Image 1 (tube, helix red, strand yellow):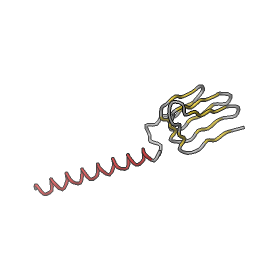
Image 2 (tube, one colour):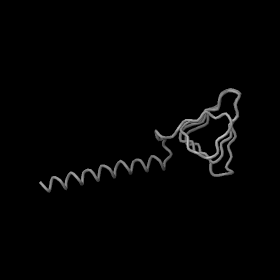
Image 3 (tube, one colour):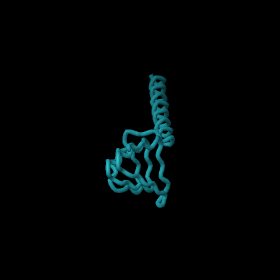
Image 4 (cartoon, one colour):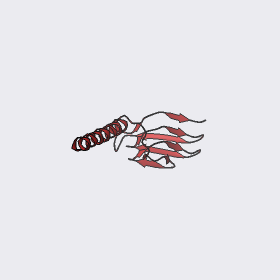
Length: 99
């Protein structure tokens, strides 16, 4: 009886450790996590972590010290400026633009 209890506890600890390890690896590698919100940027974002960023047609967006775990899409007539004044700005996937 006690052996089964200890075996079950060990299995639980190992399972939780694996889940935590995969979460840490995903976060450190820049893989988009479900908790990262999307941003429709019509002005600017200083700091913060976002999954995807969209700059609507005719809008301007300034990213400074932001972390984008997905991609940035700039629609026709929009503009994107990336700064690193307040910290490193990273875009994990790619920047797409429409004419």
